[in-house]
Image (cartoon, rainbow, N blue to C red; front, side):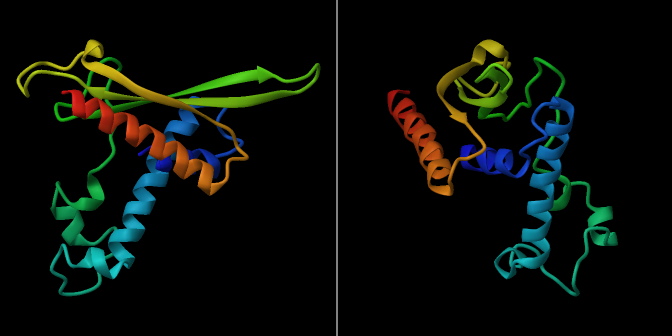
Length: 163
């Protein structure tokens, strides 16, 4: 997820100063990617038997409330968490003064994993254990983005080893 977040932030560069647009663009960007993959990737088409080419507004999609094109991303109310959440990512936008007349945006991406005993325990803000954080800047190369994601994955693997 972290490489996806960083790739998105790079795609969304210049719009990170307005959280409402950034959140809407995040959902759009992901849904659009899923749609492209589902509709255009032959490997993905194996997951659903096709009698004809399916479009995003096909009646088959409209009649299935659990269709792949309708799930995957959602917005929950503040301090309420979906019952099967495993990870939480905080994207914190910081305006940094780098000179007398020049400001830049620095973005901190923090990753948290759910730390709970069993599936019946309600999830609260105290249920999350921080597994890492990285700073993003708009000049990151693809290699830097992948390295940042690997850093978070490695931290998560170490945490799971202690569970």
